[in-house]
Image (tube, rainbow, N blue to C red; front, side):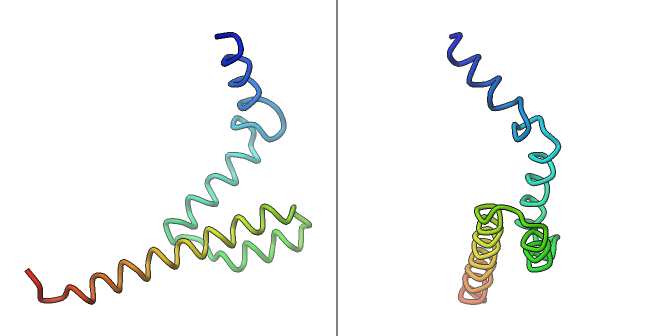
Length: 85
């Protein structure tokens, strides 16, 4: 039990833990992107300009590709099923 408590403390605390402002901001950004609310290209450019770590930039790129894929599949599925009951 102590082992699990310690892991939880490590995940929540610290500079990049789930309680940090950086984590919450990044989570909110990613959520907004997946809801189609943010201009992903502009955000990725800002990340690159600010010298953010490459994995963070690539994560945004992957999220953008996933969002586009989901939206394309939804539209394609809806178009292909028009008029069907």
